[in-house]
Image (cartoon, rainbow, N blue to C red):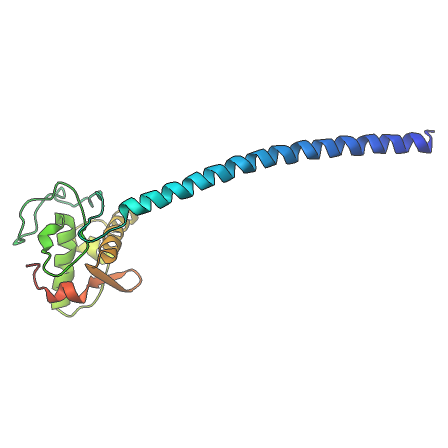
Length: 181
């Protein structure tokens, strides 16, 4: 039978090994944490710089936007629109008085035209699913989300308002402008 002192020594030795293992693990975690904090700080700085670059100012425009795939290839101009050709990049300028709809790409003009028709008929806000169907697109999530992204961008730039989440209509100033000048 082992002695009490021998048992205590075994437990002490096991406790020291466990303590050393935990210290090594704590050191490893501290090192990982330092790397993660550095990466996080770099990410925050990068986001801040990107935000400064992309923040719209007077007359600034947002960057390029991938087009919503339209059934006719997405390049058909809005009938009767002031500009019959598609813009080289889909940009959404901040709305200001006197800015014509032709400042927008064809896809954005189509959204405005549909919402203007709805407004003229007194039918109220339009959901992106209804817009997709109106444009002849399948109301699948990818198409609806592409339209929602465009509508949200137009809300942020002052062209549209979202009185109820997920439903869009022309802002009062754009609606008062008529058919886009």
